[in-house]
Length: 458
Image (tube, rainbow, N blue to C red; front, side, top):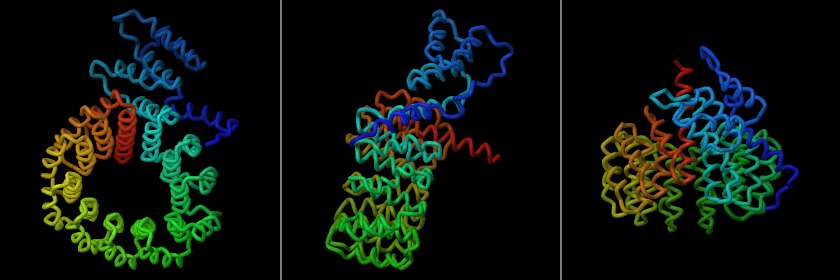
């Protein structure tokens, strides 16, 4: 994709500045009895943006001598300013050595840097991981870096950036997101449509109307959905009618949209679609019923549990779990013996959501499967657990020999509502795979933010 250098370069500088959040740009506060000359010199150099010279001071400390803690803090912040989170992490381990407690603000800054310094990595999958973490964070001060992602050469990265802008509540402030409605990739346009219409951004009605009129594929369905969110309730008929069109991708898009819109009249359409001749459409119908969120969808989902296609059975099990009706455990439990491993994974996830703590044992068994994708799926399922023994399984997966299970374990740890999650995620920051480090950093930020909110509530 062609880039406009005069615009991108200033944004690039903004990205580096954003890598050090507000808490890190200030001089570290200290209540020390006395400030040593080397600490005073480090402070002066840091304030003058002489970050390399701050690090030279650290290198001058004789071997075996412990640097002053304030000097370590300035060293950490200097590494972050230079875009070197791995080096900052090495100093952080010294800062909290000898059983000293974690410093959440410093740890959060390091975690952020692990993510934002990878948004321009040469490898696409690493950039995708970085923007995935940013999308899940959904923080409001990330607009420059997210808009930069809309210029990425990868359509997957651009779509993830558009999604992240929406999840951060920034769609109304982003002119670049409006331009993404004209992106060459349908997936990016759809992500922009969703983000802008969810935020009810004014001035896009004509564009959505044109897309809905001209396009004959899934994009037109999302444009209709956008118009509906902006007040055009009459287009619900167009979306509902699309469920009967010949193109299975259009039918899938329509079902997905109807599930998210949650209009009562759509429930019968979704229920009937689990009988569609195309297995991918049946799977979408099952997922849409879970998204719809009504226990009236249990009957068609129970039917889908016996579908000949394992993907349909898997999605149906997950959707039943999302509905939260504990009396449905008995219809899900037989799937723990399903011949397809991924169906068993979905059954575990559903049962955990339904409060069946014993399903952790089934997850532990799947976590020992020879296929790394199955082990990764087990980690994903355990994100729904509420019992301490789930943490034990996830910690073991975080040490897996393959990166996929480690990646999924790192993401799952950020979703657990338990204490003592910081330590395993700090281990994840040292992983040999950069995507695992990114996922661990994102989960750390989730946990630290959750602790902040809990502290505020108290």
